[in-house]
Image (tube, rainbow, N blue to C red):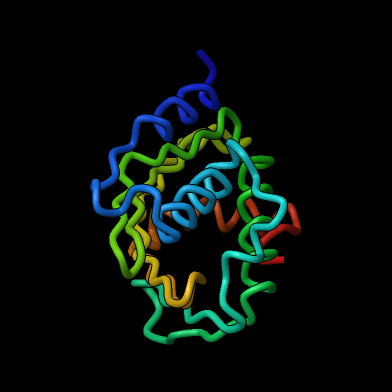
Length: 161
């Protein structure tokens, strides 16, 4: 079984609380997770986001406000660029929990850089949904785990492009 097939199987088997199944937030969470893992990229991914989305990272005290469509495009570019520079890339979503106000998603990206450096980047996203759109993403992760990937993306001219 390939890594992509394993990720697809994991996404299908992720539990969601009964109260959240078949709700608009559940649909948004599923579409987001499938695109985030690149198992099924939503052609209308940008429609999941509000006009303006706040983004916060645990390693940066600043909260950014970005146009939703711009954020969606940047996320897709970064996810695709990561897959291109990481050999054996896998982004395993191992937890997806949905409630009325949003969802949490825990994932681990892994693989090897061209120089053989192994990657394991764990992160947790707390995503707020209001009026059927993503309005805020809080990402908790270890900046040190990301550093080799960020360096490789910069070298490839793909960092946050």
